[in-house]
Length: 115
Image 1: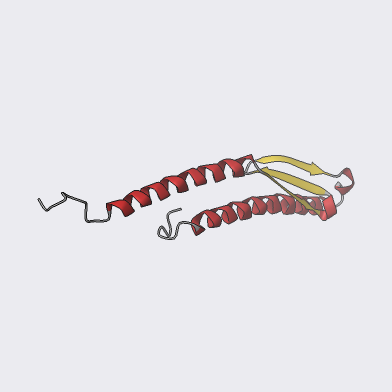
Image 2 (image 1 turned 90 degrees about the horizontal axis):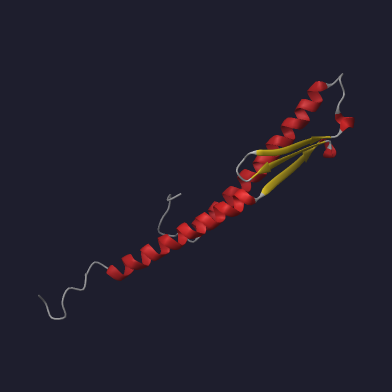
């Protein structure tokens, strides 16, 4: 054996750093996931006539409809307002999730496509 013994000439120290970085990223990811799941996203349509609230888990928490928005002669308008509020709340949730993932991936340099 060479003087000084085997030192793992394959960058053992850098592998250890990569493992530490991967563990930290996993912890950051879990924390981000918990924060997102605890969040709520609210979107209103029709000037506030319909309001939808979605949890970070993408489950609907509530839909509120202003009684003045209920017109038996124009059910289609109310349906459109409900769809707009629900889709808007889901988009807010998705946008926030994407933003958080991009922020997390920004510090990952050497691991593209990991998530």
